[in-house]
Amino acid sequence: MVLKKRRKARPRPAEGSVTLAAMRRRVTLVRAGVWCAVAAGPIGLVVAAVPAPAPAPVSVSRPAPRAATDPDGLAEMFLSAWLRSDMAGNGDAERAVQVMGPSVGLPKAARGEGAPKPFVAERTAAVRSTTVAAGRWRVMVAAQSAEGETRFYAVPVEADATLSQVRVSDAPAQVAAPALRKAGSERYSTQVRSGSALTKSVEQFLAAYLCGVGEVGPYLAPGTRLGPVDPAPFTTVEVEAVRAQRQGAWDEPADGVKARVQARVTAASAAGEVPLTYELELSARAGRWEVSGLEAGAGAERGAR
Image 1 (cartoon, one colour):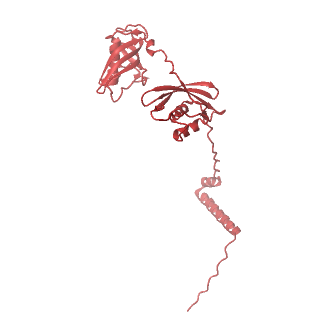
Image 2: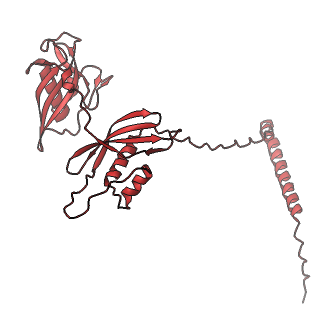
């Protein structure tokens, strides 16, 4: 029986030895790379001699605080929550009011049998915003209930010096409805005769545009692009009145003459009838009127048709 000598365990190299061994391996790899470069020719040697570029430092930039320049959205959200809140409550509406307007008092709903329900807004919309001073606005907000009642409120909003933090500074004020501007139809003071060439062109264009009766293209001036409403929402359209901004020869216009008109029409479908108003620009060419612009809804584009 042959006994094998037991191999002695090698001592574990010290930390410095491990580092030295790693450096030796690195030198060996570098030498091998140089010899490969020499074998590849002068170009390879030059490439091997060029050190790898150091990675570019990565800089992390934090976005600057966004300046609050439009307080309308905050005013709308606040008023909706404020009208639903109650000083005796502790729900989502009350918490929202405290976040958006910490110093604003809450309404107090009437208690008892037969007490009327408070006005609650189903939807809110900012009507206009007025700058009172630097960082201070007064926003008029319309609030409409589920029953259709509409009320108006002025909501005061303020921001800090950097315009990065905005809040409602005080309780809203219920105000009267804003005064309406003069009707736009007053700009169209001239009645265009029913049955005139201009009125017929308007009616034919709108029939194609709204009802899909034929193509829209033949009724457009050269260089005007305008597609129809698709799918066609109506089956018939009837022009009730066409008014222009000035007097003109509506039946036999000279080439190049333009007319800006307002057309009031009644469009019908299986669901019923709808009154609609369109403002159009028409150009005369070869004794007929062609639509060169539509200012109600999407405007017509100038360009190759």
